[in-house]
Image 1 (cartoon, helix red, strand yellow):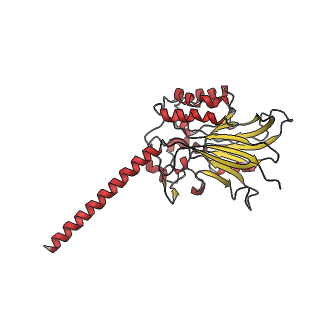
Image 2 (cartoon, rainbow, N blue to C red):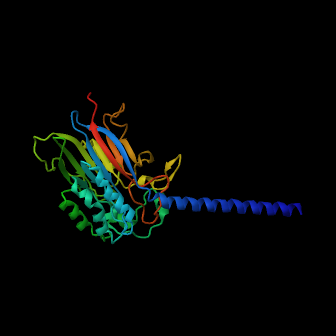
Image 3 (cartoon, rainbow, N blue to C red):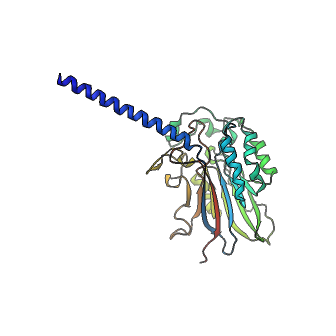
Length: 330
């Protein structure tokens, strides 16, 4: 009898533990679904401009992965225009659905009134397909056809990019450009270099000296690099090219993070410590000892989610307002 009672207690305890785990898992999923709509603006100051330059406010958007029914996301993105940024930079993966073009342009429309620049990500070329989320735990999560370019783009990326260009935004798809920014009675120039998405090997670093400049009388206060996915080869090329600040997205900040540990994956070859936020590349930040040969790197945690896992945990959807200020005089 005693052995039977112990067995029953063990079975009961096991059922309680299993039930508790199921409740905890359900709670985590419910919170992740809520957090995917907890849109957050992150504000950072970056001492990167030439000495004597006036501050420049850059709104960095990435990874909207917009689905037409996401009215709250559309409204939040539109409201970002109230920040009146000096420059908007979109680092790609805007589409989350094959029918997202019209609502996507509607979301971005108020921001098109400001100077801007953009690159595209893989999800601007290719509509979402079923994909095992566990692939993201692999060293290379890409499907074979993504790496070999055997799949033809099936999203209206050309129409989308043309609309941004028609609004005056700089298309940095394997290109250089420059933007003249005016404010507070000052005119300053930002030199830009960008690449197509390295995650699907579409990046071709543009040759030096190919930028469209706006006149030698306007001082250049910043060299800015822009990429969707922060692969080391591209970041290194931008540092070698003289970029003082690099903007990237793609990682979703890990999307599903563990409190106290952080991101499990980055979905590229950048280290987990740099999965989002402001860092130095390749080493210490430029304002720290030993950081003289580094650039500032800002990786956006992004506004959307993976089409297969529409959750975020310990990693809210984020856009960033970067206030660029002058470097400390040596």
